[in-house]
Each structure stands twice: as structure tokens, then as C-alpha cells.
Image (cartoon, rainbow, N blue to C red; front, side):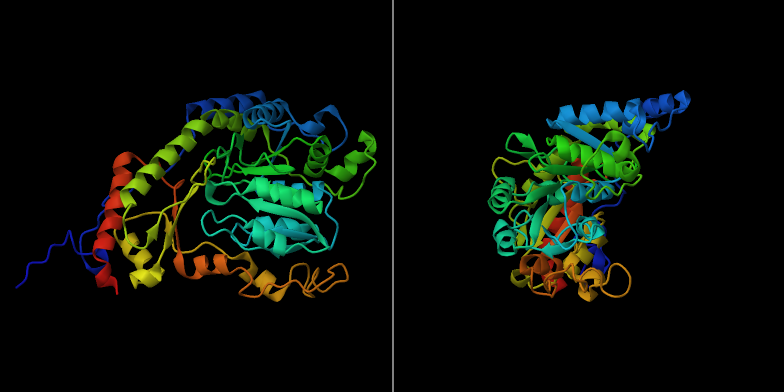
Length: 430
């Protein structure tokens, strides 16, 4: 009888798992945040916002301190806190003056809030394709999708790598468009000598619990434009009740909300912001180790970082040459998971393929806004409009969630070992 080496056999077929222990979960909250939150609780002032024109319209001391710290850190004139990055995007679309029926170009390869924030104002999302290396908006596709009704571009810095902002801003200037930077996953990433999210008319970061730094839920908007800043603050905090007392003349999109972030969250955010450089550097070190360890594996492309950019690695994106390997992406993913590699996803998303866009049903059941008079053309959401994004979603993308665990060098080495074992036994997966 042939002896079977269970260490070499894939765990999928009964062999020993490469990774036998769970990794430490990522938790950037420490004693500093606990003490900061405790001080706020003991003060009794958990929020100080008033939804009328008053000194406290701008919130309490920790809100203002955190906003000042963010503005200084990211090198912008204004920072505005909100209770989520989704709220921030809604406020941003309203603040740049979008009208019902206006078209906003956005990536299909992003979290759904990037597109629904556009729909929120009865504007029309138009999906442009993505670059196959950075997975951000392809400027060529953006320009091809501009129509007389286009009013803005929402550039998403997906996974932690900035979009090609110089080119996108040039396109926007050429056509008289505004640009929103959805940098939810990219705080701390650099584009040249500036932070991702700061090169657009308005940028947005997420403070959601599974991001690099977090306050549980929350977001931060950044802008150098005084008018946009004021409109963001108004939309955040019951604009319609404030504009009269504040003397605001332009009432466009002055429908306000309670998008306010509380004192506890901002106190935590102040301490978290101090850690951002270190936490991003840790992910970058793990990613560099992964890329070096996976080098040379046939049919596997590790992340591409463009010149003059850095990557924050919210996700470590991989691309498979499944035709060359002769094995499907899902089969490879299954084998890697069996080896104990946590945090792998065999797909991301194509927003234009969601039921909302395929059936064009959002507000009510009658197809509004697409079937209404405000929508001035038949916007195409059919399969095939974003071939790069679709091929990645359906066939070749494999993502590793870097912010899921607090990875040590030995942890990363085990992940590399798991990948190499699967690649060594690739024939057995066919």
C-alpha cells in the first residue's frame, strides 16, 4: 500500500490543514480610546448638536476637536464628521448641487452606497468600467459615458488604492463636472504627496468597525471648498430648519437629516486618528510580505501599486488566470479555505447587476426615477456594459480581507504556505 503524506495532500481531500489555529482578530481599540470614551460618559455630554441655527449647530467639543484634527491630518481646509460614510456620500451628492435627473458616473465595483447615494437625490447612476489593475474607474470609460446630462463623477478608491485623480479631475474640468472621492477604504493611502480623498471637490472616509480606524460607525468628509462645506454641514443637521436663521439664500437640496456623529465616537476617533499611519504601515508590511511570498506562482497576479501611489490594503486583491491554470476560481478558493486561509472572498460586486438596476425599481413600484420625465434617456444597465468588472466578478477575482485579522509575520508565512501547497497540488483540482 502506498503511504500517503497527509501534510502534502490538500485538506480539501482529507489532508492536514496548513493553518491549524485562528488568527488574532483585528482590534485597533486600546486603553486610549477606553479612557477617552469614559471621560465623555462622565461629562454627561454625549451629544451637543442642535438642529436649529445656534452655536451648537456644529456639535459639541469632541466633534469640533475631531474635525479639526482630521482637517490638519489630511491637509484640507474643512473636515465634517457624519454618522456613516453612506450618510457622507448622500450629503456630498446633495452638497455639489445635483438636480433630479442629472447623471453621475460611478464605478460598478464598489459598495452599493456609492450608487444609492446618487439615487437618493433622484439622480441617475451611470456605470463606467474599471481599470483591470487598480479596479478603480477607467478614465477612458468615464469619458465615453459622459452625456449632456452628466453633472458629476464619483471616483471610488477601492480596496485602498487611489483612483487616477489627475486624469479624472482633468476630465471633470473639461466637461464642467464635480468630482466626489469615495475613499471609504483608503484613509492614509497617498496619491503623489496628497492623501487619497483630498484631490476631489469633496472626499469621504469610513469609520466603520472593519476599517483601518473606526468609531464603530461613522465617517468623515473633507473639502477645501467653503460653500460645499457649509452645505455638507446643513444637510448633516436638519438644513430646512436652519437655513432661515443662518441666512442661507440657496435652498437647493436643503433637505436635512440627522447624520450627526456623537461625542463618544469623536473622542474615540481622535485617538484612532493618531494610530492611522502605524496601522496602515502594518497592512503594507503584511502585503509586501505576501507579495514576495506568492511571487512566481503561475497564473496568480498580486496587487499592482501605481507609481507615486501607496496602497492602504483594506483588501489585498488577487487576479487568477483561470484559463491558464485550468481550474475555476471557486475551486481554488475552496481549496485555500480548506487549508485554513481566513478572509478570502471569491467575488466582489457588480452594482449594475443588482435587482434594483436590472429591474429599474427604486422609489415605489413604478420604476421611478427611470420611468419619470426627469430621466431624459434610457440608461443601459445590461450585462456587458462593464466587461472588465464583469470578468473579475464572474471568473478571476479573489480578495483577501486584510482588516479582518491582526496579522503577524508568522501568520502571513502560513498564508503563503497554504497558497503554495494549493498551487503545488493544482493538478489534483482539475
